[in-house]
Amino acid sequence: MIDKKALGQKGEEIARKALEKDGYRIIEKNFRCRQGEIDIIAEKKGVICFIEVKARSSESFGLPEEAVTVWKQKRLLATAYVYLQNKKIKSKDMRFDVVSVDLNGERARILRNAFEVNP
Image (cartoon, rainbow, N blue to C red; front, top):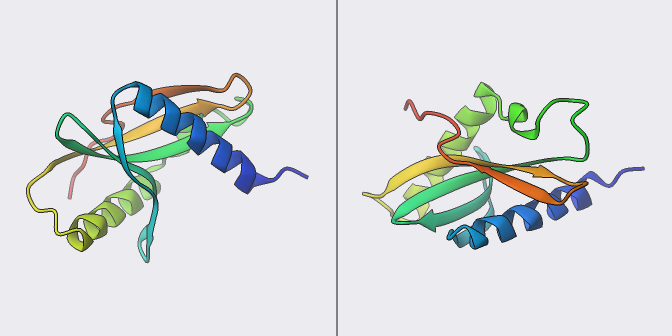
């Protein structure tokens, strides 16, 4: 039996290391609220980045980033607004990134501005 939670944690750890190596400063991990969850919240060059991590051990079901559907994007946006409100962050540039993780090769690909934000 595959332990999905353990695979998810492994994927997030690989993603976190890749982000830090690329100059991101991790602010928070696994922010949860009623609207949803954001895997990693980080800052890079004054921009707050809400990051979804998608990991796969094979591409038989497509690329990891293809799992970030329009529905998921809307949930991420709603969750990001709750985070900003809770932390009383008003004027900060923000974007949504996706980290696509290959669990077999333990490689991560960072997709900046993975989708447009249309409130």
